[in-house]
Amino acid sequence: MAKLEAFPMTGGSGRYRYTRNSTLQRKVIESTKELIKKAIFEELEITSFSSSNTFRVADLGCSVGPNTFLAVPNILDAVKLKYENKGLVSQLPEFQVLFNDHVSNDFNRLFTSLPSERAYFAVGVPGSFHGRLFPRSSLHFVYSSYALHWISRVPKEDIGRFLNARAQEIVHGGLMAIVVPACPSGTPHADVFINKAIELLGCCLIDMVRMGVTSEDKVDTFNLST
Ligand SMILES: C[S@@+](CC[C@H](N)C(=O)[O-])C[C@H]1O[C@@H](n2cnc3c(N)ncnc32)[C@H](O)[C@@H]1O
Image 1: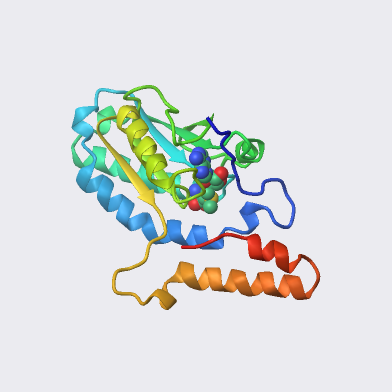
Image 2: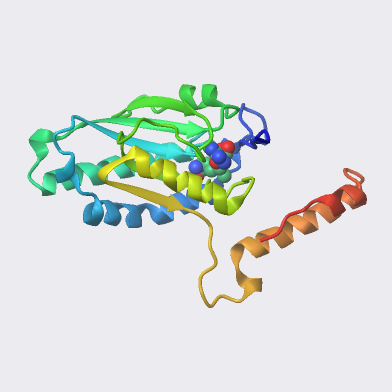
């Protein structure tokens, strides 16, 4: 099997670190909060597993934070609200959050920046989410934001492998929320955000050629399309 290349976000504390360059992804997390709360309230079947005293949340493609620490409390609050609403406060579980990304992700930075006041036990899970990462029927809520559309060898097959793995790992009654960029139906191609972003990237590459930072030949080999 061909070796899978991983392109994790830039870690460390330099100028180009992901924690300093992920405003777009943060806005996406903020704008999906209410949808996720609603889905948990309406779809999570806690009665199927309310006897379990640990509720496990997995964040797939978590990168190095702080975005991931924004999404987690929202999920936990929604789950607590659901227990309260079902009259199951006495069975409120403890929470464990499993942070996953490629092995080359800056997990050290992720761990050192974990919020000290967090109401959950944190675990790092290295490896590709295109395969199995967790024991069978062990996850109650799977969350993945701005990661599943990331580079993959064979997109359709990889999505299939991702869904197959999660089908085995999620408990009966559990839930999965996947956030990926998409084109709203009816929006003209030129007005779609991702296309505008790629056009901007193209302009930057041309400027870099003009400034002598890179060569025209290299830019011509850059293969990116939507
Ligand atoms: C744009 S970042 C998003 C990070 C974070 N979820 C957020 O919303 O800010 C995409 C992340 O997905 C991770 N990723 C991409 N493909 C992956 C895979 N096959 N397995 C695990 N992580 C993956 C990358 O390493 C990267 O950290």
